[in-house]
Length: 317
Image (cartoon, rainbow, N blue to C red; front, side):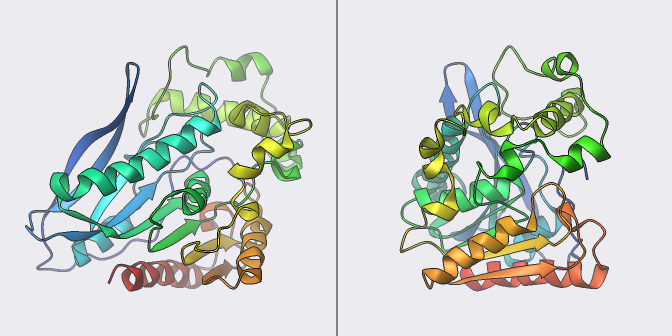
């Protein structure tokens, strides 16, 4: 399926008596004139509360902190968690090393400033993300210290230099119209972007840019800044599956077996790598589901999301 610009999650039902939640926006990092922001969803409670971080997807090219899964917002409201949804600078105007730095800096900001700004407990923190956000979640597990209590990767990936990303995608070439180079490159901005808000016209154009990259096997080179043919060793540190530390956090992955955007094998390979190191993990497989679990059996999709919520609750106790 074409790139998911928003992540579709199962809806959770809010219960009566839950605390009211308000959203505040904070700048966690400034690079030159570029402000990189995070939205914090928090009840009026005076208690220090656990923190659930959300990292949006969009192939590192498109997306926004404003696109938070409804069921995670409902979970945070029900359990009185602090939910922090972060932006990061987008490719290809900046490259993966800078994006990875933004994510690490956001998590450091939460740890350093969160307790006084929004009464978040930095020692009770779980990171979650979808698609490219799932990838950044898994990457954060190799870089952030102290380690978070857990990671939840929805249809994420553990490498950025496999054939699936470095060679032309047969699916994108045959199932979606071919994007002319001139049309695709119009989406590249003269300034650095930190988000494409939901419904913004540039989101569609950047989706076309992504499709062009996939149709021509250019994503890795254009997004990471490294040529996978000649500089593969430089990509090792950006491939979680190859750099799993001994204290990698407990990890839950959800993936559909019919995912045409991010292959199911990406989560399966990471699960094997974690098992080889005897690290706690679970891969929740949804047979027949595509990217974002599209087309999956509703009962299996619902059960997968329920497992993720249970995992978050267990690790934020």
